[in-house]
Length: 78
Image (cartoon, rainbow, N blue to C red; front, side, top):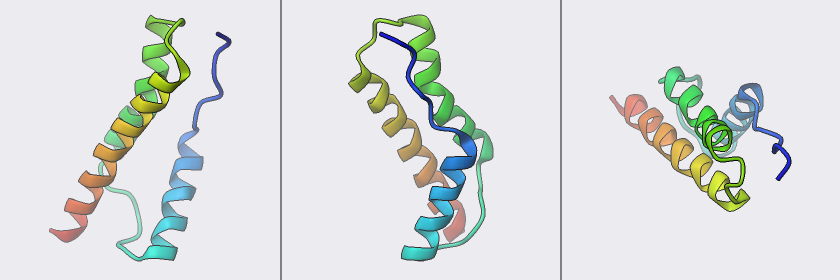
């Protein structure tokens, strides 16, 4: 498989801001390192196993981003 086009951090931040605007919540980023980790998770998986199916890479994004969103939400409520 050819290398996928990865989600860039600036795009993720813009999507997050748009979601906050539309649905409410505290603006800004918390746990910036967790976002970096979430975005590099599938990149690292692909680097170690280029034959990994695209749906497994998508799941790696989903897992990492869900953890980051949960951490952001908990920090906002504190």
